[in-house]
Length: 159
Ligand code: DQA
Image (cartoon, rainbow, N blue to C red; front, side):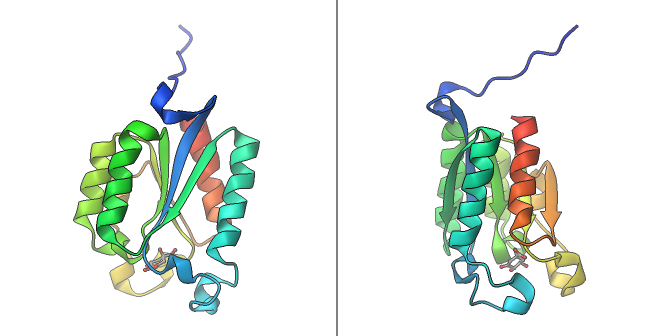
């Protein structure tokens, strides 16, 4: 029997397009300035542009946000439960510390792709553990801003 494609609910669409929240955690507003040998010279605005171009190509409406505050990120993940069809998240350092964000992602019941610009497994051992991964369908790390595009491509197939 042919499998029925699950359609996002109307609250998860913008116009006719499924909405994807692209959430960025602490210090990602400093991209371009911050440790360029690790994170590169592209800014968060450059990353946003890449995501918007990928969204147009893939038929996804991109809601791109950054916050340095854990509670605000939790609020946005809760909001995504009714307003988004999927989530791409680079939680920055909260990746390695935040049970609150993990709980919110589990409660959101949406497909989640975790992204990191750097290869966290080639770095300090405290970066090797991610709470976020327990809620993620997949993880992409080490490909710089291109990782966000890969994450959106993976989500587009899932949504
Ligand atoms: C990061 C990796 C984290 O360990 C770090 O705290 C960040 C950025 C990345 O994109 O490579 O802030 O998530």
